[in-house]
Length: 152
Image (tube, rainbow, N blue to C red; front, side, top):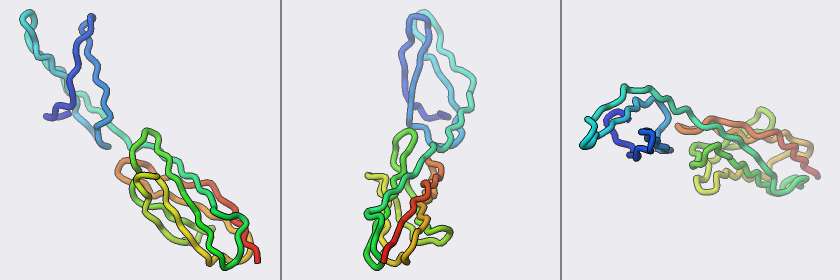
């Protein structure tokens, strides 16, 4: 990757070497392969191949701790950010009631969850969503609408 060696691989019986890696960061990488040679063959190097690593997709799901809930009593919304290829999503999840922002919480890198607790929802049915903002490695995603019912 440029001047950085990312790994080595042995040649198979057909003279082919393969290297799999998950260590490349998001962005464009200039990849080359170098054969070191042996007593029968001289060393050689490939031309550079431009390889682009894109951000990984995410999906966000959300659950309520109590649905229906009671006016004035706390209810906790837990959003989970699912990553396509593993890794810990960073940044935050913004919880919304319709278009109104309830609050934003940083995603826990171990559990991939963000939890928001409120006791300020009025009586009625609320359309709650959790919007993951994305980060340097992962795309943003939005949860499906959760219909939270609050009773008197």
